[in-house]
Each structure stands twice: as C-alpha cells, then as structure tokens.
Length: 408
Image (cartoon, rainbow, N blue to C red):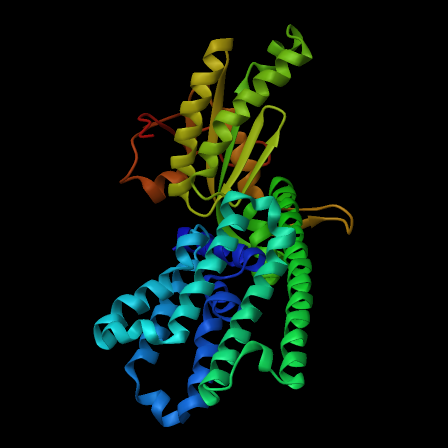
C-alpha cells in the first residue's frame, strides 16, 4: 500500500509538470488529429443535413480512426510521422470495402490523405528528424491546417456550383475570406510557437527545481508539498530509522589527504544511497560518513540496511574499513523543521536517538536491530541475541539483536 502511495504521489507530481495522459489525448484531438473529423463533419452536414450525416456508417469509421490516432499520438514516445497516418489508413482500410472504387471519387478522401501526409512530414521533421526546425514548422503546420479548411470550403462551393466554379471565379467575399484565413492561421501558428516554447522552458525549470528540492528535502517531502501539503505539518507517525556509519573513519582521515577522503565518500555514497533509495525511503540524509534513512515499515528498513551493508562492505574493504548499522522502530514526530528561510523535512524523537545508539554499538560489517524491530519481524529474519546495552538517558538497558543472514 505504501509503495503504491509513493508511486501515486510521483505520478501526481509528474502530471502537474508534464500533464496527464487524458489531457494529452484531449490536446491531440483538439489541436491536431481531430481537425479533419470536425471540418469534414461540418461540410457533410452543410451538404446533406444532419439526418443524412448521422445514418452514414463511414462517418463513424472516421470518428473511430481519429480516436485511435489520438490515443496513439498522446503517448510520450509516439512516432509522429507514422502516427499521423493512422487515422487515414484505418479509415481507408475499413471504408474501401463498403464504397468500392467510388471511395476514390470522393474529394474529401483525397483531402484527408493529402493533409495527413503533409502534417506527418512536418511533425516527423519537428519531433524526430530535425528538432531544431520547430521555429518555422509550427507556424507552417497552422497554415497547412487552415489550407485544409479552405480546401473543404472550396470543395463545398464546387458541389453547389459545379458548372461555373473555378478558382478565378471566386467572389470578392470569398477571396477576402480565404486570405483572412491564411493570415489568421499564420498568427495562430506564431502564437502556438510562443506558447510551446514557454511551456518547454517552464517544464525544464520545474524539473530543475524538483531535482534541487529532492536533493535538499527528499522526494517524499517534495511530492507531499505538491499533492498534500497539510501532511508536512508536525504529526506523529510510526517510522523505522536506519543509521550507518563508517568505523575508524576519523583515524583513517588523519593519515589521508582531503582529496582521497572526498573520493572515498563519493564512491561510498554512490554505491550505498541508490540501494537505500530502492526501498521507498521517506528521506535519506548524508552527513560526513554517516547515512540516516527513514522508512515507513521495519520490513523496508531491514531490507534496505542489508543492501546498504552489502554494498558498503564491498567498497570499504578495499580501504581497510567497514560500516556499522543500527535500526529502530517506533513513534516519531515528523514534518518540516527550521526557520522561514531554511527548512527541511525530518523526524525527531527518542526512536531516532536510540537508532543512533544502536549503530554506535555495532561492529564493522554488522547490523543491529532493537527488540521492537525483532518482535515485528521475528518470523522473517535470522538473528543472534546480544548482551543488552546501556544507553545514555535510559534507565533500563536495551535488548538488542544482530542479523546473522544477509538475504540481500
């Protein structure tokens, strides 16, 4: 359930930045794939009326073909060239057996194929073949779409006056209408280019800010701030706390150059942090040679600690070092801590302090868990009993256990 919650939060955050699949589908229908459907429907209704339009099966075939094309093109990785040919191809395949060779006598079918192919070439160029050409292709797409409207309009005019119709016989009103439509199409195309460019810049900026926020506060806090900010207020929760610290690190640093120390820490973090992140942590904090990770359940914490210890041992053994790890589980206060200028998401309480004490008492290469963690997982883990330890600030010694088998 928690894994699904984190996945849902991530999806909610992505949808705020990139938009949902549903919004992409509607956008594709209204801005690209649905244009011929809508314009052709208007022309057919103008010629034959609503009743004749509704009872013709071919119109429903166009609708289904265009919806399938919209569904495909709304996918993030869709091929824009072939995708723009889906609608006309499906319509032709399904309607040709019904109409026979008369299918090719319909001018709107020629218009469908002509403009679908033109749009496919332009979008294939803009999205795949020459992506830097969008500054002139986006306005050109708008002009092409308006040309489709004009073509359908001229076909409609030809149907009403087949004998005397010619391009040069257009009235002043028609010439004004056509030239105005081209001008409007150019303006709309330039505006679309401006909006597209601004949206891309906003998405890039949002991604950068999200990365910075994740690095500073953790993805859980960032997602929560975007989707459910009231949950960042102070509240009590049961959390599992994992601490890992390199044994003998201070002494090793005294005889090692700062550059070598920095190199080791970077290698250590790059190996251990991704393993900790695999188990849906609420927060990972890196401080000098110490790693603190917060998890929602003891199961996730133990699994993460086993993987972290496995990676840490492989890295640190080359330097004659090792790491100790401690895990405790219980009620903490979590939320945003800090001033108005600097705030961070973390947890505080006796559980955190106890987890740190457990880690401090753990030998290199081992994982120590509290009795609370053991009681929650005793049927799932293998441990050995250890002598109870005295912890500063606690009247009674702590009963502890040490994991004996690393199932990672």
